[in-house]
Length: 257
Length: 222
Ligand SMILES: Nc1ncnc2c1ncn2[C@@H]1O[C@H](COP(=O)(O)OP(=O)(O)O)[C@@H](O)[C@H]1O
Ligand SMILES: [Mg+2]
Image 1: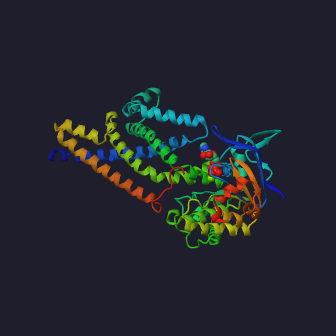
Image 2: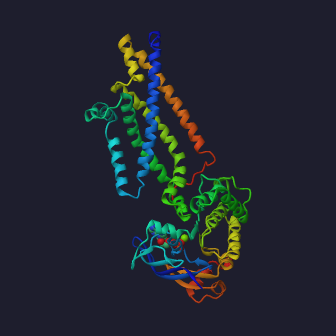
Image 3: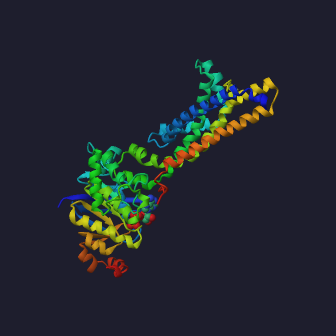
């Protein structure tokens, strides 16, 4: 199986707070990965490092065989230039907890503009693709709305459609339902379940929705203090975890599983 | 009062001059505001630094002295401006310095999440500013720019000191020729007030236009 993401001895600190310490992990191409663990354990940081929003202090990250935060110049590894990061970002897109749609653009233009600017798609093709994706996430007819005219769940589905329009090889989802009212969570999760089933895009999701993680993921990683405590297929992780810390953590969700 | 009104041709001429001076300086000031304001976000330290020097120089020295400098000193160095040109330059460059702070503040207030969404979609830094940050910042700039425009109108009154025949200059002519003091200045106060009322109405209109369809702007961090 080809490793599309590799973390090798990655360290990351915020000031004096070390969030990741010599983290080693990998993700296989096409794999659906769920990252779970207590708040503050570094899950978001891992996604933000992959999205090039957070630099690393030590180690290397490889994406699709190429260094993410470094570039090879001769025999030496140098910090990545903005140009290198731009090249690497072509493969990766992130969906955020707070949606982060562009409030000054209509739903349609939120999805059309990045296609035109970044992928060089012409306007007609970009609109057609946007319409298709909006249908996929169940939002036909909302094209000319502005984000603030939609519910949180609808906004998040637009954000998912916008990310899909970029055709990334890797999609990152950071607690994409945490900012939603409980009754809107399911409409977003069902879109993600459907994606997980029907695409071979590599997907990493940070979530506290354990039922969802079980359906979505091929593999679950349990984090604590920036370290992987345990990882495995959801069947084993949620029914029969080896580590007591995993069990303790999952107890809090027992009602939900 | 009737006597003052016989001078209405020169009052009209003065009004036109004041309005021209205001509009031309406003255009220059707007350009300078964006160039200097956006330069503060440059990756190049030298560009950021130049913008700060510009800002502090024009904000820290008197507009009147800047105008005198343009009109009386630059010719000594071989650069000649007509009075109106010197007035436009001095007013525009001065007000542009204040305007650059409006641009910088508004762009900054758009907030990290929008910036990060654009990075996640692989926008270049230039595209992030042009398509994401600036369009969201503009509605926030309009009201403050409106206030600055009124300040600019008031500043143009100083231009009479470098022989520009604006409203204030005309009032002084009428005063000299009629020996009336209250009336000419009362008349020009009213005219200035009318001009500023129109300017306020225009900025309000623009303000409504640019924020159409997006009454809630996501601002600030998360
Ligand atoms: N920009 C930042 N500055 C300082 N501390 C941060 C920053 N981002 C995250 N942290 C800290 O790093 C730790 C890990 O954060 P995060 O990766 O967001 O955890 P999780 O997503 O698992 O809840 C937390 O203690 C958090 O407070
Ligand atoms: Mg988090």
